[in-house]
Length: 414
Image (cartoon, rainbow, N blue to C red; front, top):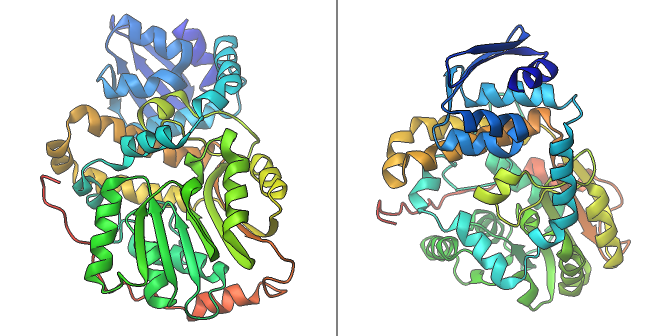
């Protein structure tokens, strides 16, 4: 069964599989060259039945061992080949069932949304220090020129977003939905002289963001709250959401955009930055949903825009960032590997293998499996923004985010 599967799928690159009984199977031709060893017969069966679901679990548990190449190379080879193949009947049936049930899997009511956020974001603060940039931007960077550092590209992302918000005068009230550790909110308050409220569902993120605001002497104009977006009261001149929409869930798209429309003033502007898919509606990979982002989903534009329209919002600009996130994830992996010993001391070996697989799979999804990032600008009134996009370019060229306050370093016990 495994031999037949490999020979039918692997045409680009060479995959060698060492079975539990020592038998060697080989499929494909040319680079990349990857060799894996499967530790037991059940691992072979799971990989053959649904590799997309079980490969990550087997790697985490040390039952799928990569003997030539690395996890990125293995996932690159897999996605390069699977993207052009129609999956088998068992996998198709599983995907169809998950699609039918996705409204239940993504039923992110406030209590469940809080638990889902804690699952991923209330980990040790030190962990994120060890692979993110100094500002702890945990979303797609914007590489405007070749050779930029991750720090430069993350500042570029914040500048790119701020330009689209058209913060054309001081004192504008800004809501940051899903503010993370506060980096964007602090820059908008300091460098754009905005009055910002950042909300998060992570207690760990909230504590760090508030300490940063105090350190930067911005606590008066940059406030943070542990609050669900559905409970916020407005109004606001600008609303921004970066890397949070993936946690909303399909059943709540109308609620989400309805809330933005409710909170936004008539001349207001909103910017939603989200991972998305270029190939139409789908489902979240079962392994990612179980271990990394429970309740999460990266939507297609065809799922986002109707909900925005039903809320009475006008789409004023859409940009599709393609390989920027792949380059971001590549750098996160490099830093994770460089600090792996310390990360293992904070967590354990299984956690390290889980995150190695997650970061590598995410990079390859952007390179080979149709994942992109959407930046969607919204307004309520046709004249709320200038009539050409020149203001975005001019603002971005002249804006300087100082970034002078530094992220406080949590203790190892954090």
